[in-house]
Image (tube, one colour):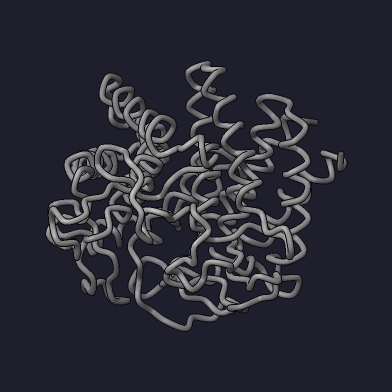
Length: 389
């Protein structure tokens, strides 16, 4: 096994000396508030629209590090100014958060995407802990309430789907909600609601969306949990599987549920074996459970978040169970990530590689990539490695 001290130091330095300074220096909009997320390789801004779910993620990231790692004033100031932008311009007044707004904060895209709500909820909850602000805590509570109200019909009136023809439910929502519940439980102060929300999410993930005959989780199912033979019904996203599994490991740890931890590790090992590109290395973005062509043309791209979340799942699986297969996969992922995603010349990591592992887009931030998966992954892996010394 690679020297754990050297590994931990590598992840710590990358987080604190390169990645967080990049976002602190390059993303803050000093004129209008909030953050720029569309950043070139060198951190220069190439588009000024603001995507609300990325705004929430960046508030959460800086507030979480302030709470969990070190009380750096510049981290707290960065989180607060982003939260103030979100508070004023991010939602419709009913705590449904827009998908995107202009640089100045004028709405562009309606609140069709419930994940704008989930990350705003996490952001305000984390910042309420950092500041003691009752206002931020109240926003988190109201947003959490809206998420629970919307979860059975998350897109609501903004859905493109004709009702009744092919109803489906998706995996992303219970996955995010189970993690969000852990994030906000100190703020919500309703242990029964939190436990019930976690129970429902864990059941959906493990007993409904996970299909042992395939060894992976389905992205979409019928409302009664049955497989559907169409593009969306056959879709598999191995990165989602692995991200969800480390969420479940956290829940298993919190509840001292060894069986849940072992189940999460079992699914993680199955999913990464399924998703690994045997020819070029790395994990495929999308796959079809029956091996048919996918509707996503980017199916064979190698994405930053997929590999970081998988690496967290593997090192956490090793930490909790000692399963050597998890460490072997972590070392393989570690080698792949640092060789292909890390930019040796400029801070932050590339997000999009082609199947061969070559840089496809040199951007460091965009509509989908912000201050979240890279720093969260570096932080999580570093903290786990510290326990293995």
